[in-house]
Amino acid sequence: MSKSLIEKIKCWGLELGFQQVGITDTDLLQAESRLHTWLANDFHGELDYMAKHGLKRSRPALLHPDTKSIISVRMDYLPENHAALKQALTSPTAAYISRYALGRDYHKLMRQRLQKLADKIQTEIGEFGYRAFVDSAPVLEKAIAEKAGLGWIGKHSNLINRKAGSWFFLGEIYTDLDLPLDSPATSHCGECRACLNVCPTQAIVAPYQVDARRCVSYLTIELHGAIPEAFRPLIGNRIYGCDDCQVICPWNRFANLTKESDFNPRHNLNSQQLLDVFAWPETEFLTKTEGSAIHRIGYERWLRNIAVALGNSPKNEIILKALNTRLIIDSELVREHILWAITRQTR
Image 1 (cartoon, rainbow, N blue to C red):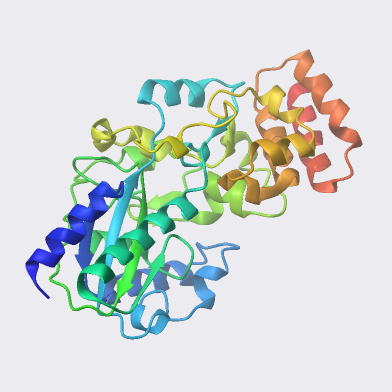
Image 2 (image 1 turned 60 degrees about the vertical axis):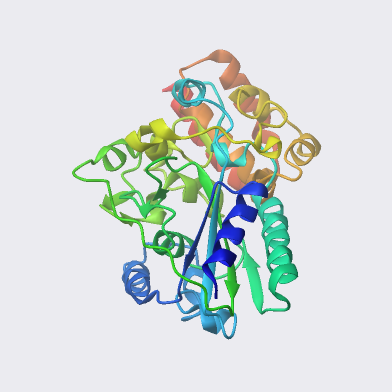
């Protein structure tokens, strides 16, 4: 396959709003070994989907037959500057939401752009076999992106780019084309341990090893039941996800704000207060999170998370009254966390 086609693919990718496009092969055996070790340590918790697909995740041709090359892309999503997000993170009464979830759910937007990229390739060379993915199938997207030269996997397990930090989404097109490959990225974390030290629950148990069962993102998004009491005080005001390891990363001084208006905060989700979002009835939650990644956790876990954050807030009679008012809720899960928060507010 000609080099000129690769140049066109990368140019089209930039025109479609991706910040970088790279090409790699399907050899992910090293990443496969790391995945098996991670699963053997039970670091995936309730993330059963990480294990149930067998080798499809690490052997692309098993997921999409005849895959020979993978087109990997990244798209910036950071909607506000570092000072603004840090202020929200450090304000105990602010409802902190991971910055990737403030706007429109990225899956649909990026998938549409990948489809347009595939269409352009098809117009250029004719029919070819492909399948596009955006965090929607068993794909080792970070390992693929690292091999494609988009960045290296940092000690916090996120992908880092020397010129753009880590605030970006990833997507892939599996193809049956035999494309020239980009050089893999090399690590530039050095001796830095900032992400390990800052993690509120010490979920990064060793460099490049994250125990999801301890991770705030897992506890507030993926975990369906009660949040273990030992972790509740450590969650602080984080009600959906956690960005601490990215906020502290020195490489994010090079991060760029997103150019996509769809990733900008909706309904002031970047500046909401805990008491305000705790007062939302379910209809308001559903309306204000429609089309957002937040929507999928549902109203019950939303209130569960906020109750924990209110329990971590400075003692306040208004907070205590709001918690007691909510005790009439039917959800036993939410009541458990409200009672815990009340205990914290009254001790």
